[in-house]
Length: 128
Image (cartoon, rainbow, N blue to C red; front, top):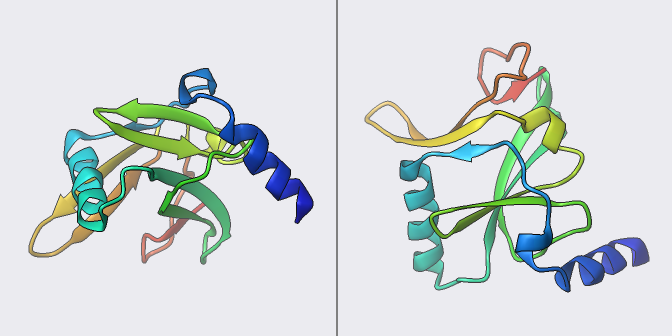
């Protein structure tokens, strides 16, 4: 537990501009949705964190959530006021991926188009 606290503390003192960039893109529509959600929450201190974790029926799952922390090794890019943060372990899995937001009669939510995914399960929630 102490290592994580140290990671957060050491990264908190680093300016976002000093962190490495990543190769993930976010569409204008998705960035707008993130801004809208943050405005609804009244929070300007949060970033969109994208991660890859073990799980799902194909082996890996995407996680998207708001995070106020910057951890050691994080990579960050800003898209029209929206900071997208990726942890160092997830960067290779997500390089070249693009995040979009769909709002149609059949689907609503964020989507990730990832050229590194070798395949996905039938439900589309996990990949390998």
